[in-house]
Length: 232
Image (cartoon, rainbow, N blue to C red; front, side, top):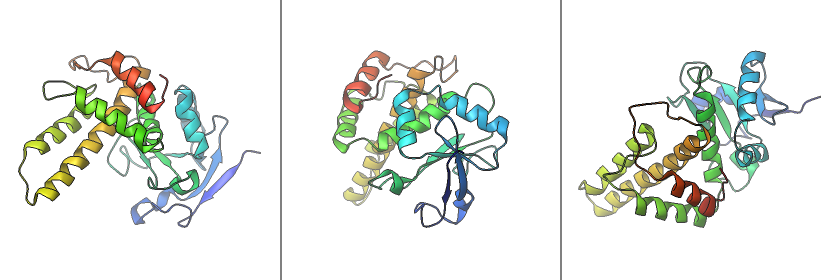
């Protein structure tokens, strides 16, 4: 019999009033994912078969952390995205993090579920890497990407532009401005990492013939391997 875990408010510190529908029972699938009980069989099979296409290291970290998954009640996730991964990211061990992947209905059909899942699993991989590893990649990314570059996808490019705009904006006091810029940089670096992994794993992503990135895929792949330890 497959294992079932039940999450309560005490086992998921990141749960708030709006996310209580992520509590309850999850059954372990053959893929290693814990799928919310009551998920239609067809949906569960689609999710699990896509998970098995993801890079082994991403699947391993997901299984180590007992990643749970559910289909959103709506087209988009509660956070307003196609897919969203939640967790207590300051936690020091898998039980404290207790990650959950919510898949929006817009992502389930078609070609986007695979890259979107890779992106979200990359968030989990990134957040569980040592701080010094993330700092090395951050230094590489900020040193190799400027205002004349186009990021790997429009989504990550929006985060780059937000960071660059923040650097030139004046704010008072200066300490507040520094915190804002640092926060925007952190978001861009992480989202860029996740989108780059998705693009390297899924040929053609972001499936937009009009988008022409200028980044060096070969160098990013090399630095993702050497700095973060992810082989793709």
